[in-house]
Image (cartoon, rainbow, N blue to C red; front, top):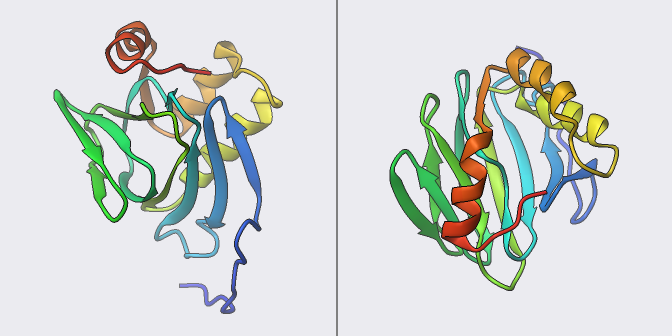
Length: 165
């Protein structure tokens, strides 16, 4: 295991980017943790859907709600998390999450094991501040073992009164 120096990441600092209505602030990278996990702060704009239904083949995700209210579909179950709640999304389970309120929501996302920070970096790079080109996203998703059901978007948008992209 690689030893790293202790550090303090001040509020609002660190690499940041956006994928549609989902803000991404890189807090602890897979390199920082020796590959054990990644820590990302997500900001969800009001009425934003983070992603279509998707499943990770390599990682578990833990979403700790800091502010606002976050909805999630976990398999066939729909749940909501408020500040202080933790939503667990195990690898292999179809899931997504959203903010169906008129206020911004913030959450800490712990992804284990590490390496998924590179997925977000790659997607932000191809989005270039706009939409992600589907033909460029597919190889990135495949490389990171991410299955995505784009056909789930219309139903998720209608059911939860949210926007995507």
